[in-house]
Structure formats: structure tokens, C-alpha cells
Length: 227
Image (cartoon, rainbow, N blue to C red):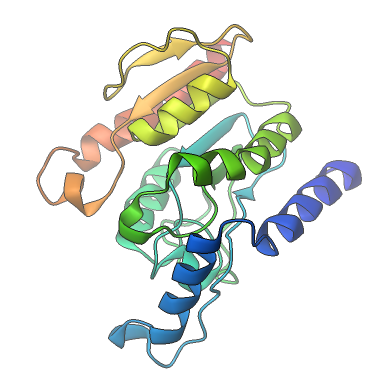
């Protein structure tokens, strides 16, 4: 990691974690952190916005919707400590983007190689549904991450919400309809690769299988090689 690039992402992370621009999200994330989930009642929740993390020289950027109330909002690292993250990091590990197949805490030794993971909205929203105003208020953070990740060639959009945000940010107009494994080449030459989100709504119903999810990151790896 170059010092300049590393310091850039440290600054972004610091500013993300101290943001309080959206009153509804501030209230909700604090309520969740105070009331907690029975399984985590002895833990101290993060209870703040959650910055992205990973390799500053990533060639693949993964964008989700928002931190989970008892996942990233608890652990302080996006996709860490929830079932969606279990799926994501297993798939990244199998594709060679992560040094281990699980992530349970910020200091668990997980390292991403060639990949960076973030969310379109940095705070856990009620019902996993940010408002359009909350989405747009948070967008500058994602924009700064994307600008700083100068080596990215593929953006994996986890779910339709992330896809719409990424497509708009990369000036894809009109954006083709979202679908699993849909590929869209942005004017910049970056490929947006769509995937169903690894939420329980999709994984428990079989809409998304591990084989389907592995195919996304195998394809991402191949696309990077082709660039």
C-alpha cells in the first residue's frame, strides 16, 4: 500500500464513521446498538456508520446496500458478523480475493487481496430500506472511495439498489435492467457485474446458490485478466 493511498482511505474511514447527517439513521443505529440482539447482549456495538475496507489497489470493487443492524453495525466492518457476510467472504476466499473464508470481527486477521468491499449507504437503515434522500446524502462517501480506487476494473453490484447507485455514478444511461450475472460496460470501460444480494431472502429460498455466487467472482477475476 502506498502511504498516500493508505492515508486517503484512512481519512475517508474516519469521516464516514463520524457522520451524523441523517437523523433517522442516527436514531436507528443508536437504538439497535443500545437494545442489542440477545445473542450479542454482552458485546459493545459499533453503532456508527461503517466504512468500506480492503485492498487500496483493488481491481474488483464489491458494493452492497448497507450494513446489517446486527452485522456491520455491531462489528464496525461491513459484511462482518452476519450471514450475508458469511456467504460473501467464503466466495471471495474461493476466488482468491481473501486470505480466509470468514469474517467475525474487525481484528480477526481477514485481508482482501485485489478486492475492496463497501456499501452504498454507510448506516444500517430500518428494514434495510434507506430513503432516496439518505442514499443521496451518503453518496459522496462512495464516490470518494470509487475515485480513490484507481485500479478497479470490475464493480460487483450486490442487488438492485447497489446496481442503480453504481450505474448512476458511472454514468450508465440508460441502465439496463438488473439481473444476476448481467454485465454492463460503463463509459469509463469499467464493467459492472450484477449479482443477487447474498441476503437470507435469496439464500434461504435458493434464489441464490453458492455455485451461482461463486460464478460471479470467477467471472470478475476473469474480466480483470481480460482488461
